[in-house]
Amino acid sequence: MLDKTKRGWWKSAVFYQIYPKSFQDSDGDGLGDIPGIISRLDYLETLGIDGIWLSPVYASPQADNGYDISDYQAVWPPFGAMADMERLIAEAKKRGISIIMDLVLNHSSDEHPWFREALKGRDNPCHDYYIWRDGTPDTPPNDLPANFGGSAWEYVPALGQWYYHQFAVKQPDLNWSNPRLRRALYDMIRFWVDKGVEGFRLDVIDNIGKEPDRKITARGPKLHEYVRELSREAFREEGLVTVGEAWSADVEEGRLYSDPSGRELSMVFQFEHNFADCGGWKWDLAPLDLPKLKRCMERWQKGLYGQGWNSLFWDNHDLPRIVSRWGDDGRYRVQSAKMLAAALHGMQGTPYIYQGEELGMTNIRLPIGEYEDIETQNAYRERLEQGYSEEDVMASIYARSRDNARTPMQWSAEKNAGFTTGTPWFVVNPNYTEINAEAALADPDSIFWFYRKLIALRKEYPVFRDGDFTLLDPDSERVFAYTRETADEGLLVVCNFTGEALPYPLPAGFEGAGPLISNYPAPESGVLRPYECFMLHRSGRR
Image (cartoon, rainbow, N blue to C red; front, side, top):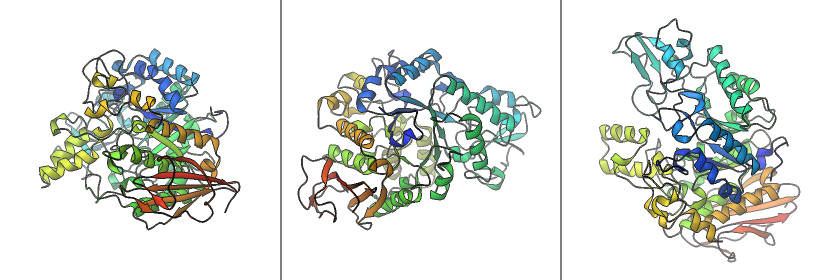
């Protein structure tokens, strides 16, 4: 168990993201809930994780699955009561697991009391908590689009004004230039810290400095001024973990967010690697460009070394399942899921495992009417209007819809995968009879136990935390290999990203190194089998 009194304890930690709606239902209503999470803490303790990133459990009308908050200091009743949240924090802590709450500071729900007050008139103190512009019904202030489709402006006839929403209409953006708003947010954060929460993942934090009149939606000129004040006023505890989600971040920005001085945040959660298989935007499909992915990883590994700290992830609630995306979710599902895990967990940074990733859960294909996600439904409509064929639109949705990650957790081969005794809020992937936690726990060669070993290795060998990074064979379109080295240790990570056997001689300096982990029983000299991976460790530097 990690000593969480030590500065920077999270550099050796591994976190696990829970999407509460889809994790475990305790009362048969078809929705996951907080008591359900509590009932699965022993499973997470067995996996060996150090903290839970808990997606929003706040009161919400659920227009965007909880990322539209109507009360920051209350729990959405279908998830449970505040007493359940307090019990989750306490029970997790008994097992050495910290609760890291997802926190949406960029926008609220339009059902939040602040916005309801704002609608009462321009002179209401809460009116300036949001971003308003005067105008007429037929002319938005500008042509900024919302991320979920349509205009980013919504007209309110009673006020003769438009309000700004970077996401859904029901998610009006907060006006961070108002100091009273900022103080209210800081006080709310202290409410949760006082309850024992040990950190926060800050949703789209790069948007809080927006200047919509200048069409600046991310990385605004006052962004880091706001983040530093946030850190100073709300995140005072030494061991508190703060993770900034920043889709717009490059390496230079990453250094600012995660500067070791602690002026801003513990680490950055950036997405540059997520575009290694995009033809343009997320719905434009392209094959994985492995050299592009490797160059991206190298840029962040070298760029933050000694100057910042990165998050490591393949999956989350907004992304498709990685084994379906960059692995093989058919014949080589187990091998490729392990390979992808090794490729990620060997790097410097704090890994995040998304629920079910440790089981090799896969994407799902549904008729368009069965998708729940607002972004997916808007993309379907808009891309058809843009002239894409139905076949092409659905291919993109099958590959990229956020709902791929939101199917219920697969606990067993029982009805509804053991997720609920009622009717699930969303479709359970039919492959749950084969892919489930009960089967994984019973199989010592499962993906679950591979993840558990990776987590243990990161705590045992300092090279995972402290080693520098050297990319090998950067132009290879099939193999991702790299070394991590300190003065005392060397680590070699080799991953075959294909379903073919490949020749691969060991790099000089690792011929006699000892194996730490592999996804085949024993390496074959000079050959990589389909989706094979291994890590070798030796003492000393080359």
